[in-house]
Image (tube, rainbow, N blue to C red; front, top):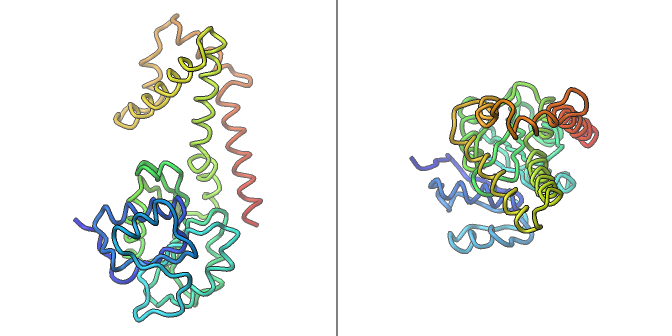
Length: 275
């Protein structure tokens, strides 16, 4: 079933994440005539989509004949206060604002909007670029069931969606899944470096590490089995994997301690940036 929206869809910001979302919407059948991109310069993937589908692009939008169904804010956080006030004037009673601007609270949008305006704050991650992202989202008290459903559909165009009941948890989502791809990339780097320490040449170690991490990730994606069981399935008692895991899972300064420390540091930094 095609993605159907009752009104215009404004996409403010057509960078990497904005373009990824746009591609997902169009692939799901959203009518290109409903889309309005607001961005001073449209480049890369978004520019290709614009040419292919004949999308409307505006540097700024002074007025619309019909209030937008949704305003998707995908600009850099430091640009939000310059861009959003004018967009807020376009919002109608049924408009929902969907923000993926990192570190910007729902209150930072609500101050520019009429009372009781519907706002959803979301945090996707970079695998959204290939439709394999995961997004944490939270809605304010004024978001209707239909508006939440619309935002869910728009976000699912680039991957899974996890809804939260408390906005304060967004910092934890950012620390786990928003920043998480960087942790996985670092794991791949470290595994390749460890392979070199074990005697492999650079290219062989990197090739093995990349294929192992991506393959294990895809295996987990396709399986309903929990990660702990998948790990145990690879581990023979007294074998090579068990020897390695004894180091990674040691009680003091093992992998779990390091990851917990890292996630908590990211969560704290997110709170600081959101002030």
